[in-house]
Length: 291
Length: 272
Image (cartoon, rainbow over all chains, first blue to last red; front, side, top):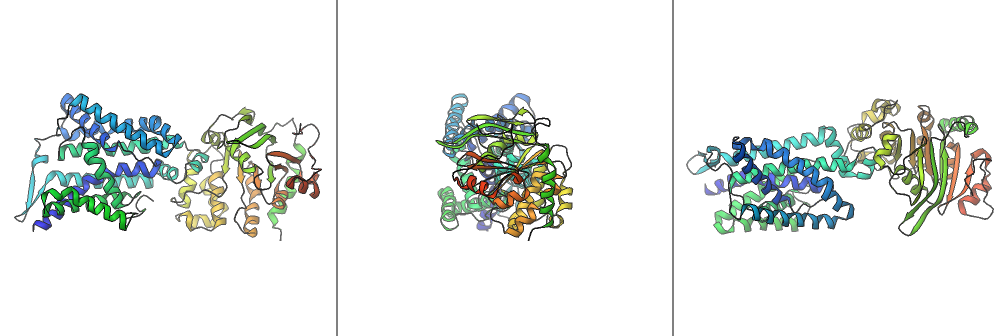
């Protein structure tokens, strides 16, 4: 029964990892930007949410209505300025620029918010509550909610990419930005829109992790970025549903590892990550849902 | 065997724009003293040309003559070192490709360059997203190529080379260009398919477009063009109406043999 429990918890936490991963995957899939500041930006979003909740006293759950648009605007602006400037030089430059961004954000957060960790909505019934199945399986409301949010986000993204005008342009630009230019599309603007969407999902990831655990200035690189990478690689680059599968596989591996020995949780996840990298480098789903 | 439309276009070409060439009507597209470098290499050296409304203007030349570079520079994909490009008298030299498309310069790139993860219809929809107002719609493209409507949901990778080329032309047409740039349509296609694709030109021209094309196949270019312009190592070696140039002149200009002469009419010569 303990093993069944581990698997169920792992699947649910996979939803959180998919939220971490889908923005990273989108940024890489469309503009070939490996955003090393991805996790730090999620932490920024979490801190912004804490600030918004403290100042406006809006309900914790509704904070995303303010934070997601804010992060989306930040994504558009960053893409049109710093990231595009780096892309115009070389792919390596974007890697260095996002690494620099990561260092700046992390140290900025340390400076202004200290190294103390904080949670979001720690007293809420949603965060602390759970229901039980049988006698041994206890399922938290929060992991279920986060999993549902992840599925809704992925469905929404898929619908947007496959049906809307801008979704079509994003796919066209990802295929061949020069040909898209010849068709009259300003690929820089389309990149900006893709970045805005990616940053919107990053905001959700930051808030979700703040509720699920605690945020500190180093959470971004220590946990969010690493798990996002692992989920993307396991699932398969450029596949939206691959990020969910990757997140779930990572989550289950971690929970099974923890079941064997509580200190093996993270290790088990990365062993699976390495195994996929060696045995099936294209990921479990190669090039699926996005096209 | 020469197809019916190809012959039609030849007749049309000889009576339509050739005789009207001249200052009274003004060129739709003009290139003035264009110099383009690929890093250190001078790819184009002081190229000038004038394309008049309704013309089929063909740029011919051997591999590496600079034909594609010229077309890509007109489309905005290369930046010239010096010189200018004018559309209907307005300088577009500083505009990005997408702005030029909005002004009416649309290119069908070499190698087709369709969006591989998009369906046929989605490729056309992308082309129509920023379209200028005009006669071409996706439906009109489907009317012209009935097979395309039936296969609109297929990925373009599943199409044959000729079909892909047709979709690429359709994608450019739905943007309603004033000048359609065609870069090496015949590349990698069977001669019979090439004939069929060039056979569509009269229908396209009938909607009021002007065509500037690059073609390595000289006989094909001479068949469809109302004006030809031969490049050799980035320089103009011959220019004129197909009827006014001899096969020997074309051969000399194409291969760079001595005695290549300009067949330009007096008063519009581009040679200094």
